Structure formats: structure tokens, C-alpha cells
Image (cartoon, rainbow, N blue to C red; front, side, top):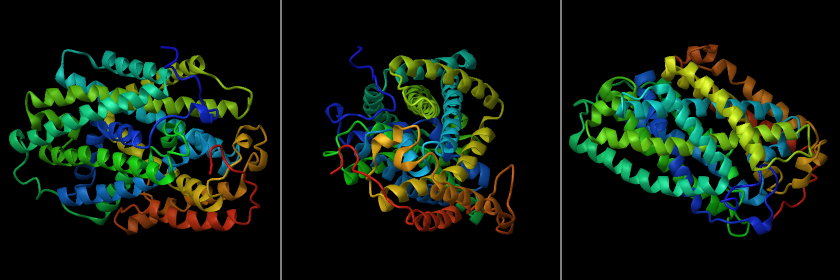
Length: 460
């Protein structure tokens, strides 16, 4: 068993420890997207924006295709460098400049972990109403901790199993909706297409996959660079993520319209028995898998934050377990706060995340693919002074800050609506504006920087 436990955290994966194939990435990202939270997210367009079925599907698909593009490009970075995504981000922002991104990423991990605890407990509670929600939530939290401690190999193995189970489960849902479902007769006529609804839904679809960007390469970094090339890594990740995301989101749209409310709690009413029992119970394994991935990423993020100031500190499995346990306590407390108004809390979380992740992903990918072309001096990323990347990188920090600030007039949330968004009847195009500004700005600033990169481990 000890040989199966992962002993590394954020350190470089040596060439002789590299293993795995690019097609393994399909199953892990397909499995990560199959679950109640994805169905709940798919139900947001008709519930929040009053969008009809077809425009909900089109907007979600457009967002998924775009968000998946960024996500898969990040995945391809893993085999090239052999390090976690957030360590690699030091190459753009500097070893300390990266801290602002790390804090945001950690909040995201904890928020999604808390949301999964709630949705998982609700799924099982819907099948067994006699089971109280709080103990169920604790079970989901603790199982995720155990899987995370064992680490990389177990997470990949569970991904393979969950993919096979999920395909069967989704087939049951689809057949159940068509043959036995209690779908509203006018499900395709309910709702009104609006620019605000389309753009808001597209942003939700894009952010759903973009939220994986800060840790997607964590699950490809063990793969050999000579066999896991950029193209193969990209396409296997892209296919698994988009397909795994769109199918349950489509189900969520149908259910939300049929019950005129929460797609997750409305699923039993639409499917009936015993199909809803089978499906909801199968979600338990999916949520535990997804939670383990979020906790794994959160733990690596904390290690990266601490290692910024203690460069000689590289914990192994035991240190990962201790950090993970602390994060579980914090996430569980957050889940307790979210449970009173779960749908609105989750919606506000994913909307706010888009504003900080869009400019980060733009800077990271432009630097990797166009500025440095994948060549980084990996050893310098672990130095206290950042080596050739420095403690702070002005071009990246300036471009990122501007990318966030230009979004403010275009924001449209429950907490704040910018003046431009107000003129556009609440349509949120902030993420489009941010990309349009951040990409050329960073290109202009970064190209003035004198490049000092060296080939990365395993680079051709």
C-alpha cells in the first residue's frame, strides 16, 4: 500500500517516475464533470435568467467549448514541465507575485469543496430521507480526505471507474427522461431568449471548465513528455471535459424547466422511482472523486504558499494529510453556512470567480505558448528570489490588474451591476472585455522583457 501512496507534492517529477498515457486524461475529466453539481449548474439558465431550453443549451455549449479550450491548453503544460500548475505560474508572476493568484485559487477550491459536500449530502438524503444531512456531509468530506492522502494514482484509478459507472448512469437518466420522465409538455416553449441570459449562461459554461485551469496540469505532470505531447494531451482533456460537462448540464436544463426550480432537488420528481434512487445514489461516488481532486489541488496550493517563504520545505504524504485535514475543517464550516441558501450562494461563487480567473489564464497561456514557448528554468521556480523570474514580475502583474479592473463597468451580479452592464440590460460581457484587453497588453509588456528561459525537464 505504501508504494501506492504518493510521496511527492509540488516538487519536480523526475523522468524515471513518469508514467501514464494521454488518453487517461479523458476519463479523469469526464468523471470530474459527471455529478449533481453539474446538473445543478445546467439548471441555472432557466432558473436565474429565464432562458428557454434551446438557447440555454446553445449558450452552455458555446461557453464549454471556449472554457474547455483554455483548460486543455493548461493540461498540456503538465508533461512538459513536470510540476503543478501553481508552481508553473511563478514563471509569469514571480515567486511572490504569484501569491495573489494562490489565495484566489484556494478560495475557489474551498468553495467548490463545500458546495460538493452540500450537494452530495442532499443527493443521498433524497434517497434516504431518514439520514440527517450533517453526518452525510461529514462522510463526503472525510472520504475525499482519504483519497487525497493516497494521491495521484488513486485519483486516476477512481476516474477510470467513475467514467464507466457514469456512462451507465447517464444512459439510465436519458432513457428515463424519454420513456418514464415527467417532463413538462411545453418544456421547449417555456422561457424567453435574452442577451443578458445568453451571455450570462455562456459565462457559466465557460467558467465551469475554466475553474479547472489552476489544477488541470496537476493530473498530467506525471506523464512522460516524449509520449504525452501537446496535441494528444490537449485533445484527450478537451474531449473528456466538454462531453462530461454538457450531458449533465443538458439534463439540468430539462429538469429545471420541468419543475420550475432547482434541477438537483427536482430530479426525483421528474425521473420518478426507482430511477431517481439509482441515479442520486450513484452521484455519491462522483462527488467523492471530485472532492478528492479539489482537496488535492487545495493542498498543493497551500504547500506552494508556504514554500514561497520556506524554500527548503517539501512535505510528503504525511504533511499533505495534515494540511488536507485542516482544509476539510474549513470547507465543512463553509458548507454549513452555504446550506441555508445553497443555490444563490453557489451561483454568486461561480459568477465572482470568472472575474479573477479570466485575466490569469490569459497571462499564463500567452506566456507559455507565445512568449517562452514552453521553455522554463524549472529550478529557478523553487528559489526564494525566483531566480531569473524574480520575486515579482511587473508585466504580468500589471496586465492581470488591468484585466480585472476593466471588468468592473461590465459586471452584472446580485451584489453589483456596472454602468455598462446596466445599459446592456444586465448582459455581462466582462470576461470578453478582459480577454480582449489582457492578451494584447501582456504581449506588449512581456516582449520588452529580456528572455532568460532554459529548456524545461523533458522538453524536446
